[in-house]
Image 1 (tube, rainbow, N blue to C red):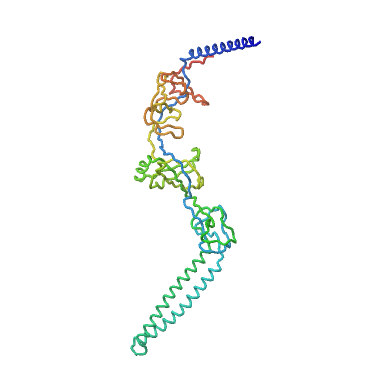
Image 2 (image 1 turned 90 degrees about the vertical axis):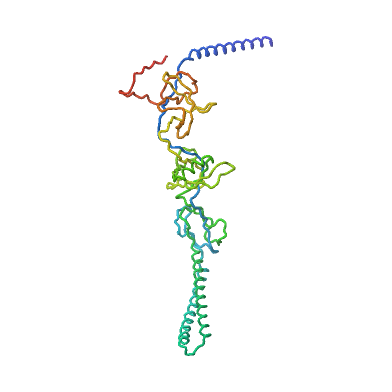
Length: 397
């Protein structure tokens, strides 16, 4: 039984091997038969257009100004006059502290000021009387009495000035019981509730106000871009900046470069830059990560092709150029930028040349090609006056 089983298994292996050999032989023959058939590709034309050149970086959104609102005096929080998340203007009332202690101190300072003012007025009257008696030389008062009265008037005048300062200081403390917004912006979450005793040293303060219009984005670029940026800013250029979402698909807002940092990060070899955006639609929010594009130049009549034309090889980027005899040539190229589905070409291609947009994986130098329209595109009707006679070979069935 064991011997028969081995014989059966050997026969099955031989049969399967023969089938495998015959199938691959027929496939190879078919491949050889079709080896000279043209490769169907999608073609495009090298063209010229004004092309913006961007430097791409990654940035973080920051509020243009941020203030933590704190009380400047100790006291009981009597009333909160803002709602969380609302916009406030500089000077708007945010909260009220119990003002009774400060108001009493102000009244006391004013009372002392009034007392000292009355004493000064009386001393001035006495000095005028003594001056009259002394000037006429009647000998009714001596020099020392006159000088003493003059000194008393000066002393009371100084006291009155001190009282005025004390009243002003007490008034400031009364004003501090009204907590107002130092800047215009949007309030965050309230950090303390009514009825609590608050202090200037409270770590979290009362609320944080962030200025969102305008707003700032800090981003980084490689240090090798710094000389170009410095050259443009030194010439007075206002460099445009566009902020995109994390997928670099949707533009969020457009602004201008505001600041170039004064040092390069030695650890990363990058330079920090800050751009300012009007942010009228509030598409930018503090803490948000964005992709940033800094416009440094607009190349006039730049040579462009679809980005898929650019292929990568051991010697660098290249493109398949379709020649007049419908064969392809491998052409080394220099790419300046890949942006928005277009490749800006520095060297290697000329306007009007035909290049392969899709189907390159089947090509090599000298391959014969047949140009087909892009997938899903309707065939274009030729212009009667511009169309040239063109024969189409019917597809084999």
